[in-house]
Image (cartoon, rainbow, N blue to C red):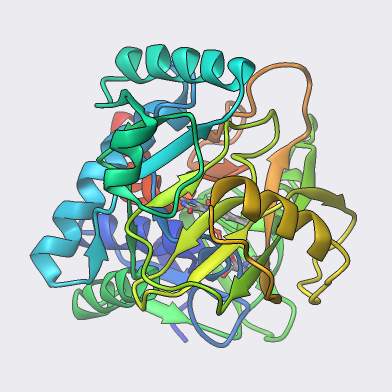
Length: 360
Ligand SMILES: Cc1cc2nc3c(=O)[nH]c(=O)nc-3n(C[C@H](O)[C@H](O)[C@H](O)COP(=O)(O)OP(=O)(O)OC[C@H]3O[C@@H](n4cnc5c(N)ncnc54)[C@H](O)[C@@H]3O)c2cc1C
């Protein structure tokens, strides 16, 4: 293996692959992407709702808002360019009580601020969009959609490889040392030592641990798991259906996939370590939440999969993405707390990171 690279991208989830793609397109440097798993996207990037969010939930100047709004458009353009399946199915956020209706007003305002098209519509109009929805009113957001995220990642990998990026799987970063010319990295399962000018740390659930090796002020990240249940009671729903959101998540919603299957999820609960083990203990909660959103009297649901959100430890402020070069460590870029809407934002995140690198 060659042992010096201009850029090392740690993590071949959707964010690492998007960064590798833009670097390979726009820079002349040689690039190595590593991932500890046997192929790309085996963690959060393949354990989510595959929703292309519109980006209106977050305060206007947050990274989440800016990168999601931009990422939404970039994702559809990317899919058009490379013939990747997606469906701009739109999303209904439903309100069934007075309090929920007033939350819709707040979300509508936030949508305007973020430049996202949305409107509050009557029950009658909601039913025209999705005949199975249960609501008194809803907020209709046409730019939300679903995408085949596996094919997006595969295309990003493919484009990178076609431009001579080295992508090594089954290679787990163990430690990083600061050296005069940059950084040296060694591995858990390989004796090689690789040096690089620039590290871009997109290691998802483990990114904070990698960053903290070199930092005095440590990042604190907490894990929040979300389960998905599938149903065979209903198929081919027209749009995504959400409740009004809560502080930690968007709430258990109706997820549809490109095969027309209907799922419910994800819920949100704190866990101490990464484990995707299926857990049916929330089945009753899911049934209750599903039937608040749909008129169908859903009875049969079964656990399907789970994902884990890496969230910056909550300190009372917005849980925004952290994407930055460390002040004391030139060319050490960390992406921490990339939870939702990281999939939607991935192409915009990559452009943002590329911009940070160019400023140097
Ligand atoms: C339940 C759930 C639902 C979600 N729904 C949506 C949604 O609908 N829409 C949306 O936009 N976003 C959604 N998200 C968020 C989105 O999935 C993530 O933001 C995104 O996938 C993060 O991608 P990533 O590349 O940063 O991380 P990951 O996909 O986790 O990739 C990180 C990679 O780093 C590798 N790695 C880690 N440590 C090392 C090491 N030491 N050495 C080498 N490799 C290493 C891992 O193997 C992994 O492949 C959801 C997330 C969850 C959990």
